[in-house]
Amino acid sequence: MSARQAVVCPACGARNRPSWEFCARCGDSLEGATLTTERDDEGVDVTADAPPVSGVSSTVVLALTLVAVAVFAVMAWRYARDAPPPSQPDPRMFTIATLPPQLPDVAPRPPTPGAEEHAEGRRLARAGDLEGARSLFAAAVAADGSNAVYRTAYGRTLWDLGQRQQALAELGVAARLDPNRELAYARALDIAGDRSAAVNEYEVLLARDPMSAVVHEHLGRLQYRSGNYGEAVPHLEQAVAGRPNDPVLRQELGYALDAAGEKARAAEVYREVLAVAPEAVISRGLLADNLYAQGEKDEAMAVVQEGLDRTPEAPLLQRQLGSLLERNGRRAEAAAAYRRYAQLAPNASDAQELTKRAAQLDGGTGGGGTP
Image (spheres, rainbow, N blue to C red):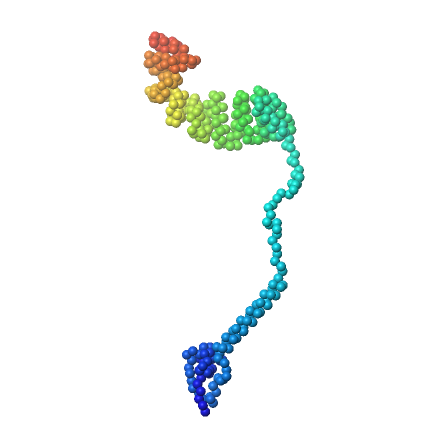
């Protein structure tokens, strides 16, 4: 019996020829595999004519690759044959939109009743033709009596023409149609002298908006002009709170307090006015009179003198200085102040009277009363 060598595959245990690089059974690498010597009768699992695994494997791989390429080519051809043709882009997407050759007809809106008459009336009013405007505004109101704008324009034109009672009637209707016009109606009543009706309108507005500073201001000033200082005070206080930087409004509050007998509070308000407007001559004079009435005669004199230091050419302060000096028994100084006043305000209604008073003070007579 002859002996032959074989390489045992470490993966599957098959015997392979020593020259083979790969196992004939499993195709695994034989590198480092065990080389054995066996007799022919031991059944070595090899064949002398079998080709090496490496050669068989390369051929098979190449064949499989060619088959795959062929299959892929056939599939691609069938897909291209059966697929629908590619869609073409809509040519409209490359064009600029244009208007249709003719717009569709739109039914015109019916004209607003009285609008043309109102517009023409405004034009005539601006041109100064009040009679022409009145006629056209009357036509607009006749066309639409529920239009507050027409009523207001008609009422104002009647007012400018001196027809105040008819004007108030139109403005009153406009205020009932549009609550935003009630303040203008109340002010018109006040200006026309119907203060009782104006107070009622202001109170209606305050019932709707109790914190309205502008309504409080108008009502407070109405009461102030009417001499109802006690009733004016709370409204003027609300108005000052809404417009704290208005010295005139604050001065009116001070005077209302003073006239209502609230001297101490009035003095505080006068000082607040002077703090922001130290050259406010009237407020300074009112403060001096207030202090003198409270018995603070020296303080009153100092307030007037401070004002003269700031504005020595102020006639009212010269007049008041003369009055304070005369009341304090300083007759010669009072006479000099009165003469200075007459020089600064020669056209004043009391200039000649105070010149005579100065002469009386110098002559020692006490006639003529104290200014």
